[in-house]
Every structure is written in structure tokens, then in C-alpha cells.
Length: 564
Ligand code: U2F
Image (cartoon, rainbow, N blue to C red; front, side):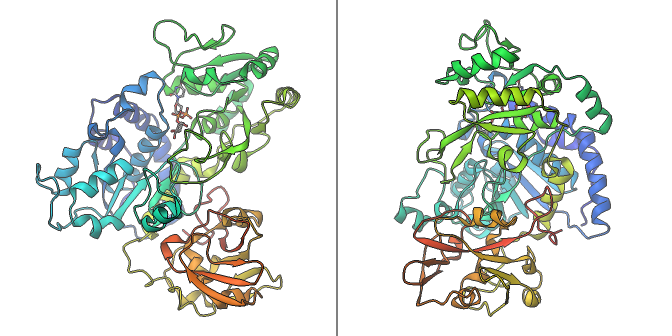
């Protein structure tokens, strides 16, 4: 059956069920964004022309909303709790549905079991049942539930699972044996999935797939209206929980901000104003999403105090013509030094409250400064007051961008294929490179046809030898490219080092998430023994990593130029 773009979401809203505040929030959001989704689908349909798209049978099991996992989020929807995850699930559901796939949605263990065909009450079903779904989107909680209740089918079908994983899972934490041996064991990792099966909220590491969410898009008329209607001295503070107002050291920068601007907040409170919020702040209480958007439309500045990390709100603010001001973290926050990230399966260092805003958007929309430095902070406020910006939304966070990306994943990502059938295995990659004049850069050119059907297409490979201590994620970005882990097998040979004019004194195959790499001194070349450990993330001053990079579409970092 062919997938046909849909043009209304009413059936999806029924599929989503009801009752929980979280579901109500998600349904309102999907309903409100319907016309944006529909317009986006029309544009994408035009762009794709008449390509064939199979309709997939898809199960969406939102594990964190099940009672069985405690469902701590739903009761907090109206009380300032996290909404980022709900924003994302609402958008994933809308996108899959608009793309024309056949959906089932479950938010309880019972519904999950009945959809999987597991007889209720049969805890661990020992049989391998045929799975009626081509794809299952879930999260870590759901993954655990499926493992417990699918019996042997879990092993067989786990390649069809996609795990929505906000902050991402790096390969070193995903590989059970390696994680256990080398201290990368966490509450969440060690599933031995293909790291691309984990789908993140922002493009953290290309080892995972970037799923994202959407922000509302403005047309030209709306943009002009908003620009004209801004209150030039109005600032809105990022964060719905009163706890952010307890942050140490905020008095100083708040006093400066208060000198220049009228400060607004959207902090949840019960009957009296939250005691943590100073009296000079105009607190609106937690607002429904559309009213929050209206507030952003009037504001000049959206300001972060350092928490929450990496949520949707800054993108919404920037899309509504605000400038986003945030604090730089020095030293950076990570699972090694900050409670919030502790136990998360990543060692990514977070250099500001919203690294995506800093690195992918930047000035004039995003200002990242040291809040402990009063002069720097005050100078930023003064400069911002004089800066005019247009509303801006990166393409990858528009409905069309998200549809395009999910379409490409569904069309091309296949983790059930026998390993090595589409990509050359570690030992078989025969000389597919042409040496570029610059000795540290390797370009794939001639033999792209060696791997027909590979995705991303192999001809987009550009290889670099990174400086010591540099991760492949950064090494590729240094060259305006993005690391592409599926190309690692092409670089995992002595031959590849030779082509980079790196003669190896010795070669060794080992399990190590930084390999292939060159160790100094001694010109030792280390090759990767375990394909699951190929990792864009990670660095050590001991090694110069061999990095596979590729180009990407403007505003759509998940897709290479030839990836659609
Ligand atoms: C992030 O979760 P949050 O829910 O704290 O993320 P935010 O960026 O604050 O915003 C989520 C949504 O809340 C909406 C707003 C955003 O789409 O439109 N909202 C609202 O409806 N009413 C208001 O008054 C204010 C905002 C992140 F997404 C999670 O992954 C993290 O777990 C969490 C903690 O770091 O931060």
C-alpha cells in the first residue's frame, strides 16, 4: 500500500485517547498546528514529486506516560513540569500521521500487550510471535517494557524500534560489554542497538538520529506585524518552575536587567505568587501554549538563567522575533559534574544553556555571555536593546523540515538488514578513496557505485585526520561538515590511513569508541573491532581520530545533499 499525505488530523486525535493532562496538552497542540502541517505536507509532496512511499504499520508507545513507569509527567503538565517531551511526541505523531502511515498509539502496558499480540497476564511470553508493525517508536521506559513482555520476539524485532531519547546515547554507553568494562554504565544505556536507532530532540551527536520537533512558523505579514508591535524594553524569563529563581548569584545580573527592561515571567504558582520570584517581576503564571506565544510576540528579549537545559522555548522565542540571551557555562556542564546530566548515557559537554541556539543560530538572535561578569552582561543588554532582528526559525524545526527528515528516515534507515550487506565490512573496504592534494583530507569519488543503495550515499564521504584531543563531531564541523558514523567502515583499514599519507608502523584491531585512530608517538594505527562502537563523539589527547564527514543540506543537518 502506498502512503498518501493526509490533510486533517481528526482521526489521529481519536487515536491518541484521552484522560491524562499530558494527552490533552498534546492533542491541543496537534490540533492547533494542523494547518501548518497540512501546508507543509503539500510543499513536501511537490518537492518529492512522484516517488513511491510505502505505507508503514507503526506503533507509537509512549513509555514515560504509562502508569507502569510511574507517569510523573502528566500530573505536572499544569504545574510547570517539563513540556518539552510532550511537545516532541505530539509533533512526532502528527508528522507520522500526515505522512500517511498507519498508526497505533499506546500509553499503557495493557494496550501495548494487546497490540503486540501478547496474551494479557502472560508476563514474559516465551514465543516468537509475528510482529504486526514495521516500526515502533518508543522511549527508554517503553523499551524496557517491550523487553519484558515480548519474549524472544524482542531480540528478533528490536531492529524495528526507534527510541526517542532527548539528550542522546553515545556508542560507548550503548555497547553493554564495553560500557561495563570501561565505566560507561548508566541507568539507561547498554542496549546494543544501532546508535542511530536513538532519536534526539536536538542534533547533539550524529551518532544518533536527530528527530527534533517543530515551532510555529510565521508568514511575512505576521512577521511584519510582530516587528512593529514589539515592546522594546520587555524581557521574558525562560522557565516555568519557581526553582530557577533560587539560582545562586542571580541578584547581580537581575538588578542590571531590571535597570533596562521590564521583566516578565511565566512561573507556575498555586494561590499566591511564588515567593522565589521578586516583586519587580510581572509573573503571568504558567500560560497555555498559545498565550505564551502571544507574550513572546510582544517581548524583545527572552532570557535564560541556566535551567531548563535545551528545551523548545528558546526556538519559539526566536521564531517570534525575540533575542535569546543565555549564560555560558565555564566549565561546561556534563554527566561528570552536574546532577541533571548524571546517569544520562552521554559525556557531551554543554557549554551553555542551549548549545543548539548558540552554535546553529547564534548572533544576532542568540547571545551567550558570562553572567558572572557584570560588565559583559550589561554590555550585552545595551547592545541587544539597539539590535533589530527578524523572526527566525531554522528549516529543520519547521513542519516541512521535520516531515522531510522523518520521511527520509522511514524511507532509508534499515537496521534489520544483515550487517555488511549494504556497507563494506571492516576488512573488505577496498581502496574507495581518491587522495586530495591536502594530505589530511580524503575524498571519496570514483567508486561510490561500490555500495549501491547505501544511505547516506557513500559519495558524500569526506575524511579527515583530526588533531589530537579533537572529537570527530568537532573535527567535521571545523570543515563545515558533519560527522557521519555510517561511513566509519570505509575508514577502518590500514589502507585508509595510507591514503591519508599516514604510514602505520603497526596496526592493531581493538574495541574502542575512539578508533580508528592514530596514536602518537610511534605511529601506531588502531582499528575498530566492534562496529557498534564507531562513534563521532569522544576524544582523547592520546589519539588523532580518523573521521568520516559529509556535507549537509542548509538548515537540515540530518540530511546530506543527495540524501532525499
Ligand atoms: C526542557 O523541558 P521544558 O518543558 O522545561 O522546556 P521549555 O523549553 O520550557 O518549553 C516546553 C514548552 O512549554 C511551553 C512552551 C514550550 O513549547 O511553548 N510553555 C507553555 O506552554 N507555557 C508557558 O508558560 C511556558 C512555556 C526540555 F525540553 C526537556 O527535555 C528537559 O528535560 C527539561 C529540563 O532541562 O527542559
